[in-house]
View 1: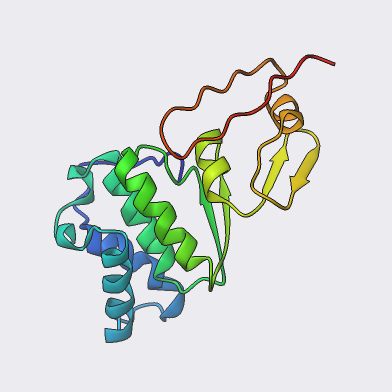
View 2 (view 1 turned 180 degrees about the vertical axis):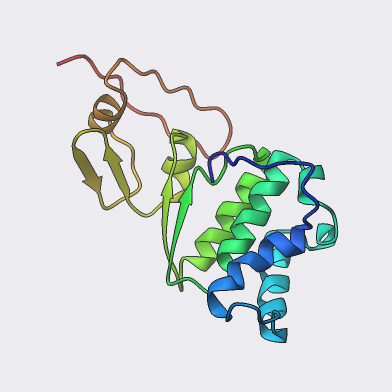
Length: 174
């Protein structure tokens, strides 16, 4: 989630939040099964937050909470995973780890990520769809001047630092 209304004083642990992803797999009033707990353990380990499983979620940083919410989604064994601003509040190191993980996961699961972070898009996706009253779709993950113009509807300069980076050609107003 891009943002959540989370009462940080609510006494719920990381494990309990992640287990909520398994609610659709169980009947009301039934306890979580060993399989449920195993799926959640696997998901929490994949996102690197397993060691915090007993900590109240309100004590975590924004990036750590983001990991918990991604683990909650992964614990459902989704066929398609929708991520809204998956790199919001995460540090650059986790961003790299997250997209390495998502690239591997994408071999078995369709992933749709919504983001405004052009840098993330250009180096981590197979295809790009820009939406702003119209749709521009490109099968390769390359960001074009046309896409930038359509998406932002104002002049945009892209400054890229680090490796890898992509540089877009200069474009003029039409």
